Length: 247
Ligand code: ADP
Ligand code: MG
Image 1 (tube, rainbow, N blue to C red):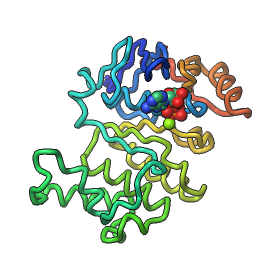
Image 2 (spheres, rainbow, N blue to C red; image 1 turned 45 degrees about the vertical axis):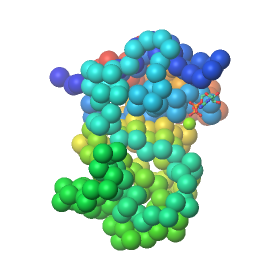
Image 3 (tube, rainbow, N blue to C red; image 1 turned 120 degrees about the vertical axis):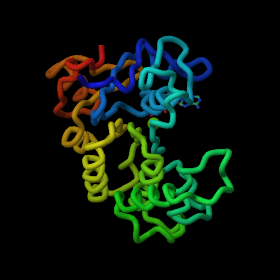
């Protein structure tokens, strides 16, 4: 039986006077490649924060591997938007990726053999092993994006949440990144926030569309229609009402 790894049930969350997401119910199954799409300000990043336990819901419940998000935090990897990353921070790519292996208590400890192996494997997996000594400030957009994914991978997550991983790269690098994600999906559950509907419909197994509420929670034609309405063109959407999808 497929395991539910993330379960949101009637979740409302937001900031000050604003509900950024409202009454969202969504189940994410182990091994899925779920794309989260929707307009700017639709609540996509907020939903990721709720899953990560960085923002508590005002109403509803969130479970990650059956526990409160904070208690499952180590099983999740998070790749923030590259555009928000401060590139001038003076560290090398391997130091950036190694951050994933540190926790507060061991900041000054020497990396273990397991730490070094995890960092090397993550760099290799993102095809940036040759850049390990390069200062982060000297990376291209696509290289930085892959370094940020490698950092998340180095913590050996079971679920990887990525916030707009192709928004600061060209189409060709976007394709490369999606190819790498598809490979990762062989062992890691993926939740990808994206505006690249072409990539999403080509690679993701399921599409959830968020515009404060989850608007694409219907099968087939209805979901396609909702997405087409939001993006102004026809798109293909896979029915996600089976297997514990959105309700
Ligand atoms: P998306 O990622 O889909 O573009 P967000 O989740 O970032 O949407 O934002 C949803 C809404 O919440 C927007 O109206 C945004 O302005 C607001 N918002 C996001 N973060 C904050 C914050 N830290 N404080 C106040 N409002 C916020
Ligand atoms: Mg966002």
